[in-house]
Length: 227
Image: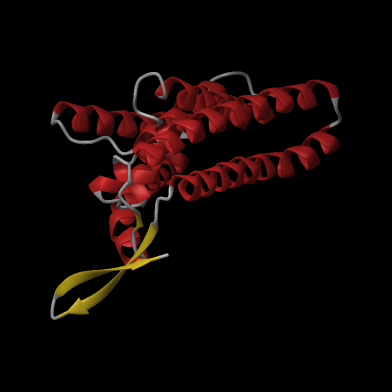
């Protein structure tokens, strides 16, 4: 059976599609936190930003609109940071705060798979305006399931190593190792999954098509360039 091609959207389409989601999911909570930081302190500024994110999710759910993955991830992160901020202000809790966030985010990726809504897919669709055929492509769906599971595993391992470092190593060692652990594990996870995806497409005989746009008058005319 010949699969339809996988269409990679153009840069212009990506920016036009991703910008509103980035603003709603990341920029607005950040601005709310900054605005309330001096007025009510860091902890309650986190609470206000969290309330906004949860309210955005509730509103979209009540009105039957799609909930962007960036909003889900933002709410999850803010919830973890708020819980950590409400704890005692010890050095361990201070360094443990991002670790709790990593653990909760990893759990969110893991839980999203059996629910049938892989978080990696939701995040990708916030940024990449794939066409319907590409979204329903079996290899694309399988890729986002595996990426969600891989990201969950990486996050949970990352969090576990961080806790071990925090409890057994000096502060200097902890800071140095932690500063490189996250970027390395993230790059390895994404790189490994990208290579697997490319090999899977090649073995199945599926073409990759890069979508470009030229402007004709005031209408975007999509031009597909096969690889």
